[in-house]
Amino acid sequence: MKALIISDSHGLTNELEMIKERHGHEVDVMIHCGDSELESTSKEMESFITVRGNCDFDSGYPNEAIYEFGDNKIYTTHGHLYNVKMTLMNLDYRAREVGANIVCFGHSHVAGTELIDGVLYINPGSIRLPRMRKEGTYVTIEERAHEMIVKFHDIDGYVIKSLTTVVNL
Image (tube, rainbow, N blue to C red; front, side):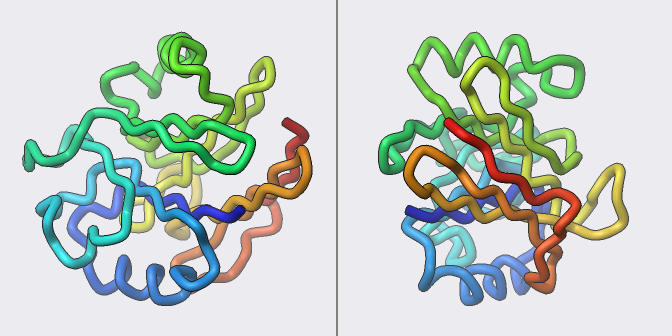
C-alpha cells in the first residue's frame, strides 16, 4: 500500500492539484494534516482524508482521523491540540490510546520522521512555508512486508534523499 501525506498548504490550490495529479494514480490514500485554509468541500480537498488545523476555520474538518493502512493503523491530526512544537509526548499518548502505529501530523512546518517505541511519527513539513529548510515538502509512504519506506519530496516531486528513510515496523 502507498499513501501521500501533505500538510500546511496555507491556501495553495494549484500546487495541491499538481501533487494530486502527480501521485493520485499511484497511492491508495491521500492525507492532509491540516492548515489548508480551504473549505472542506473545495475541489482541491477532494480525495483527501483531512483534519482541521489551527488556521482552518471550516468546521467541516474533524480534529482527527484514523485510517487502516494495510497491516497498520494511521492516526492523523494537525498537532496544535497536542503541543507538538514542544514535545511528541501528548501525541504519543493519543496514538497509543487509539492503537495507531503510524502518526501523521503537521503544525510545526518542520519535515521529519521519528520512530518511538514502535510508533512511526511523520511530519511532512509544509509545501508553502517550510521551516528548517528552504524547499517545501510532502511525503509518500509505501508499506512493504514489515517495513515502511518514507520518501520526502519537494514541491516539484523530486525525492529529497537526505530525508528519505526505511523503517521496520
